[in-house]
Structure formats: C-alpha cells, structure tokens
Figure (cartoon, rainbow, N blue to C red):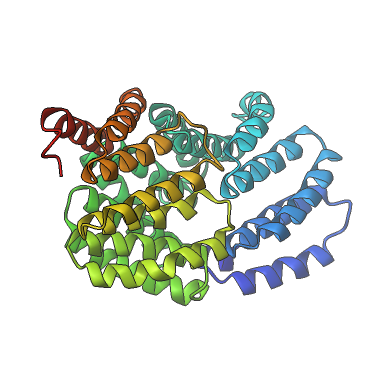
Length: 381
C-alpha cells in the first residue's frame, strides 16, 4: 500500500501478489482488502482488463463473506467503472450499495466515506456539481473523524472538493483546499508523489481558468516530467498532462510548440485509454482551437465533427459536452459564411448549456458567437 501511494506500481503489485499467495482462503476480510488494493494498482497502470479480472474475483470472494465485505467490493467495482468511462454502470452499482453503507456509517466510517467519494465522483462526471460538492463535504467530515485531518486519504477528498469548487468558480475556496491537500501530501507521501503531482495538475487548471497561463505552463511542465518518470512515456496520465500543457502553450500563442504536442496526443490517447474513451475527443477539440487561431476554418469544422463523433460513444445528444461540440461546429461554419447552419447549431448549444450547471466560460462564448452572428451576419467572419 505504501508503494502504491508512492507510485511504485511494480513493487506494490509484486508484494500484493506475494501476500495473496500466503493469505489463507478462509481469511476473506484480508483477501478482499488485498484484491481491492491490487485492482487499484492495475488501474493506475492502465491495465484495465486485468483489473476487471481481479475485481471479478473480489466480488465472488466478498459475496460469499457477507453484505459488509460485498458492499465494499462493489464500491471498488464502481470506482473501476468510473475509470473505464461507464458512468451509468457505476451509478447503477452504487444504487445497490447505498442503503447498506448508509446503515453502517457509524460502525464503518471509512467504508462510508469511500462510498460517498465514489458517488461524488459519479455526480461530478455527470456535471451535477452541487450534489458532488455536498457528497464530497460529507465524505471529508467522515474521513477527518475516522482517520484524522492530516491523513493522505483525507487529503484525497480535499482534492476532489477543491476541483468541484474550482468548477463552481469558487476560486478562493478552491485555492485554500488545494493548498491544504498539497501540504498534507507533501508531509505524508512526499512532494514528488503521485498525489502531490495530481494536486499540481489541478492547480495548473485553476491558474488557466484565471487566465494566468504562464503559471499554468510552469506547473504543468512539472506534472509532465513527474508522470514520465513515474509511468513511462506511454501512459494515460502522461497523455492527459501533455494535453493540458499544449492548451496552455496555445493560449499564449505558442502555436508551433502546441502543435508538436497535439501531433503526439491523438495516437497516445487512443493507445492508452482505448478508442472509445471520451477523453480521445480532447485532442480534436484542441485541434479545433488551433485551426481557428490559424484561420483554417474547414479544418476546425472537421475537428469539431470528429470530437462530437467520439463523445457520442459515451454521452447522449443533450449532454453539455455535445453542446460544446455543436457550438464549435457552429462557430467554424459562421467563419466560413454558412450562417444558417451556424445559427441552428449555436442556438442548440446555447439552449443546452444554459440549462446546465457550471460551464460558465463555454456559455459565455456560445452566447457571444450567436450574438455576433445575429447582429452582423455579413461581417461575422
């Protein structure tokens, strides 16, 4: 477990496998804990098929051992489904777990907080930010009570809460939570740990939201370097870190540097996350912005279409992500002089985003593009 928290996945896997061989079959409680940690280690290495197999064993072992262990196993399985982008499946699993976990919240506060944290993550990915914020807050109180305010598992929830605060544009609160999490991780698992690095990544995102792209770039370069050391160059965490870095470079008009990274990103993201993962859409969205900045509007339109095609593999047509791609298609069409098609897409995107929680920046952009098109249809270009 220590090795796993420090990012030493190979050492963690070796030790866990060794201990599993030595743990009696009848010792179900310890075997469940070992299988849970082993699945986490495999997921961290993007070995999702192997993690799925381990979790199948975990569910079978726990099912024969009573409701308490089985609920804990199902929480782990829901966490895996979130990582595999099956948000609906994870939500369904958690609906089975919630009644039992809630009844045992006083006897098992850590298991209760784990379940709330996973459910918060699901609501977060569904962009139900107020619900996610409330779930993370209760999970945080439970972990502080059970583990203490300075425990790294407590800080994990602090980090999630900070990200939701950032997305709700409560930047002062988010900044305070980021600082607290980074201090705890530094004191408990080290400044170079995966947890400290994840915090830097999110702090870079907030700097970018505040349009301080130079600070965001510096933080993100540290994240990329650490991830390459910890995971190797061909890993999903490296892909996501490079995606963010390329965006911060582009926002500073360092277009050639950004393009070099974008050329790497699409094959790397597909290879490490799978061809159907929603994050494969992000390099396309970035290529849209790069093409717009260079005045290559047909290329921008195709990038938005490709992003939408990718996102439809995960989300339904009324999801805010699809509204974003529709708006970007509309913007490209407006810049190409195809105003009627552009207006329809921008109105659709504006309608969906206006009824969605969060998404403030994209709402503002879509409304601006629509207003420009309506007010000056012949000069929008």
